[in-house]
Length: 379
Image (cartoon, rainbow, N blue to C red):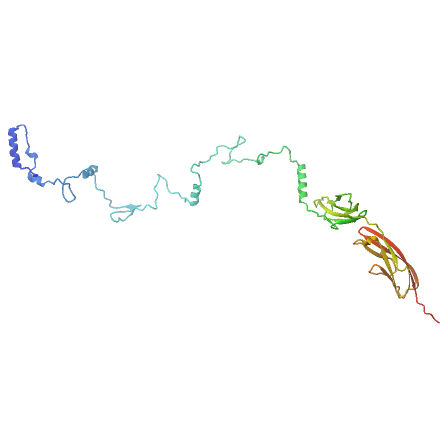
């Protein structure tokens, strides 16, 4: 298609139009010549290297540029008056060591430590500041002093559950009684011991048994069965009497003293059957004649039903001159007057003793001892 109009032909056409249409006026001054049109840009969109029509995007961009707008060119960049060197037409301002200011606020002079952070983390998000506006005790207001209130509880005691104060006063009398009880509990045990582990007594006889203790308190005793044995106290000894054969026990108590607590101990008791007391003795001779410087022996025989009991004993005793000897067998006596002794005669009373536990029986024999001297016969 032809893009240009012939001006000469156009003028001829104009003249013809004016003759036929006198009211239409065509002003040739408003039309460009061909040469002028050829010098104009093409109808293609302009590029960075050739003229052309403006694109819609460029028109939008152009409309966004304000009138009298200028190109902004930063010639230098400084931070705290210290110039920064651009790199590839760019400058990076490192603010990693800075924080954004908040009005007139500045950095704190105190470090926010890990301990403080942990403390803050333990505070509930809905925690509020506790402000005490008044303090009352039993609805009576207290007056603060130096921003503090002291609550005097010296006239109060701490409650223990539902317990309340006793309606009875704890007087000095009760205090002393309590002190006595505590003192008793703290006193040492005097420990009671006996002279035997078991008291064995023959019926119808009595025997004494020693009570030992570190305390000098009064001693008392009772029998568990008074039909078998009875007991009395004499100083620190128990006198136990057999009533009938059998077993029982004696309870001994020593009273409390200033230094020792009271104490109790038990002694077992066995009562054996009654044993008849009897003892007799004979001698192989009741008269002895012995020459001074020589000796003679008398043998004794002892009889008793008690000697059939295990643990029974028999012995002889006598008071006589120094030249009389009771031998270890407890059955014989030897008479040996010295050669310096002149003729003499003496009566020796020998006593036999039979014993079984508390039963003792005796018998006596008198021995007549004559001492003579040797006389040499002269024809």
